[in-house]
Image (tube, rainbow, N blue to C red; front, side):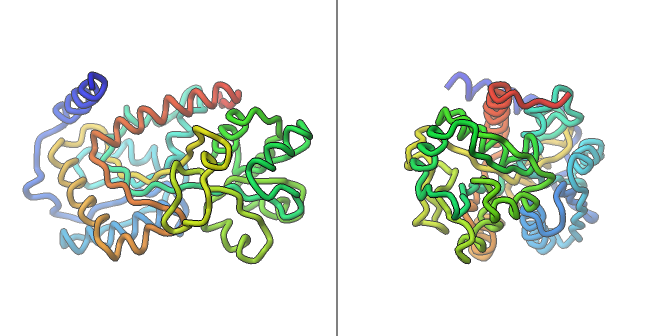
Length: 319
């Protein structure tokens, strides 16, 4: 209870230190939404669904500006704290902070969290050439052949990498990490049997699973997904304590007035609860969250500490 009070007090202090209020008249001009992902990516899809509804609600144009990678976050962090620049980003921002010695963007220093919009699990998929037909069989195989199994990722510090390292740590297996420029670049080697498994997004893995080209073993979430009810979690498949979920969240530049933060939260939370929005976003093991700014802040602080610990144990760092 004391930690919750402390977190709430800190968040309140940050908001209280923000600039003068103008929420009653806001917005009076177009809103720029910076999305540090490529068009069509998870963050982009969420941003466009939310943006369309916000435009309808406010009677203002919502301009989605894709600035891939850290460039987008840096641009958003330097924007005026007047509510007219919003960032909708993915958990890769926090993963980067966990592995870099001197990150150019520090999430809770440079931004005020508004809400975690969507949480999405990854899936553990293996090559059909691999005899393992369950998570337990995969672990047994890896322990019988230490250092001989390879798992592919979208690069050092990516979601697929951290998910794989957490799996390695909790199971005690010895496997070889093979990083690629992006997870799509790893798929030919997975399909060809040169990689044994990957942790990937459901939308990229499921078409290959449905075609019989990959075998799906488990979800990384803490509980089963309503959209994939027959797929077990890693925790229930013999890896107790395993939980990994990426997130897509809304943030404003640090210094934004408290009532603007909460106006944006209230309007977005209402949008996220609409039936047609849920239908569009709660697919492929995605789950709408819509937590408060205070709850999202506490979650980010806990997640950063967690992944810094994993990165240290796995010796993942970038100077």
